[in-house]
Length: 82
Image (cartoon, rainbow, N blue to C red; front, side):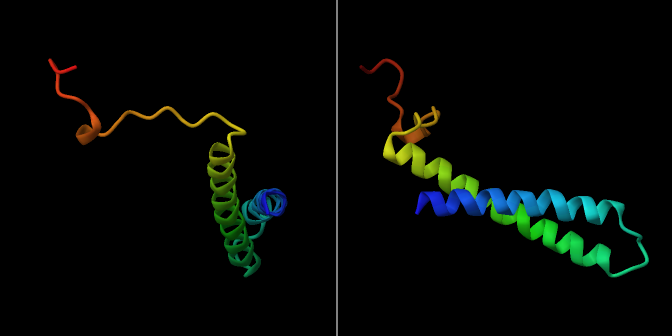
């Protein structure tokens, strides 16, 4: 499953860059600008979601070290207590 998500990630980011370039360089009078911008946004959104899934999966399986996070206030021990 992770290989399928990785392939989807690459395709989505390629679509983001390709359609983003088309949106930036197209004539503003045509409808191609709108379509290219929507496809670029869709590719960027799918790319971010797939990348976040891959990061979470790699941390859960032990392939990557989990991110260091500051503990929340209710998990900290009060000062002066050991």
